[in-house]
Image (cartoon, rainbow, N blue to C red; front, side, top):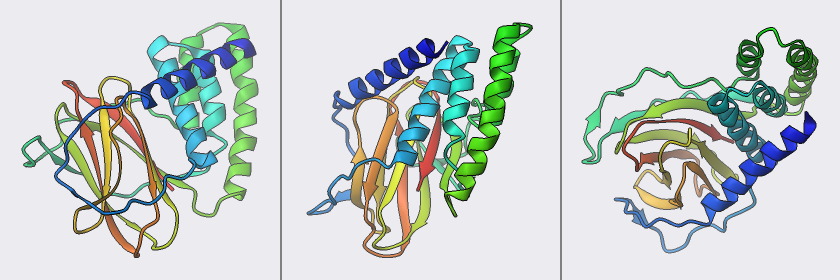
Length: 243
């Protein structure tokens, strides 16, 4: 069974690398700054969340109890809090609109992934035994993760319509490394932009695909604008995480 896990993880990592290597030309209304902060290495926490999320997406799409259980085990190692942020939804003409969707995406909480795995497993005794064993491991992993982080990574899930973009204003501390990751459901291309309050562009990820990542060091403590664009012709349920 572990062989499946390694193959699935390897396939997901290969897909992520492939997406990063494809560039897409896009436009933004934000003004660019003369210099951008050097791109730093992705933190282990965000890397772990990205890997677990992608494995969970695979599990949901393929009704794979094994993948969902492994995703739960991975995600449980990172302590996360709910990101309290108001989203503004705008269309391609920058006109505010009400969100078209009730949040109907799959949950990526470890406990919910375990429940989904149990549903798929049905009466399969082998899978249920494996799930029970991993469930115990998750309890220990979550306890360890809480001890290792005071604040944790903040996360939320939203759904964005075709051609629209979601905008957030979130406060960051000046002089401290900041990073933002977006993990979509694989249905469309998503682009990520980070701007200051004057809409000067600080960082962007416009590669093709819906796995986005940006980091920068805020010059001052204050609110920064995060925009996530859906470049496709259908909705996309994404997972946003911020350090």
